[in-house]
Image 1 (cartoon, rainbow, N blue to C red):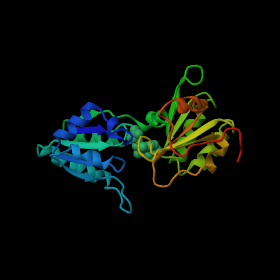
Image 2: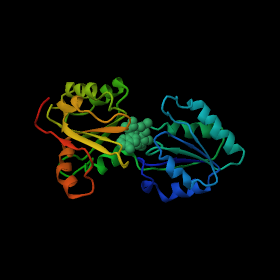
Image 3: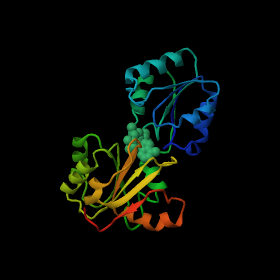
Length: 252
Ligand SMILES: C[S@@+](CC[C@H](N)C(=O)[O-])C[C@H]1O[C@@H](n2cnc3c(N)ncnc32)[C@H](O)[C@@H]1O
């Protein structure tokens, strides 16, 4: 039984071990943000999507636990394939605990988390000597949790990466400013990182709410001075992505 991270999307960013586990698998339970084409590598396995799909709810977490446990106890090689890294906002910890409780031996195969890879692929290093020596990764869908974390951080001292926050970007930007971060702090939205539709916007914190990311692509918000590094890196590397807007210094 393996809990496997599939990285941001592009199967070329999978680990060697992740590929090996897929090739050996009898059953693959995968999330919605996994490249379905890449599942062709699981030549012997039955593959089921247990994530949220267009107009269909995701399979309840308890059902996923039951499916994994039953198949593993039947002696099947089960891969639970999750976007990014299994232990970063992916409920991988819960699934690991369920396996422990059921007495099922398992391994975790780390994946490339979008918290780092999405900014990176857009030319934004989450730390940069002399600019930021720490970065904070937050889930943007629970306002209280965001407020609690922001209370314990001095404004404009770290880079901030927010997952699951694109839809709430205007509210999140207001909250961050209410906690003392300056309105002209550089900010970015990176959607669909490593996919052919990758899209990046850069501007300032006060402009974040007015950005118009494409619908239907997952994305991260990045807030902090490190966003400026992209101006140099993106022009000099393949990080340049389609449909990019830069609007520092213009409010509104
Ligand atoms: C439930 S969390 C899972 C995070 C995952 N475990 C990880 O380590 O990246 C889903 C969030 O990851 C981010 N995400 C996933 N795929 C992405 C991509 N290709 N580009 C940008 N952000 C992505 C989005 O913020 C999305 O809402």
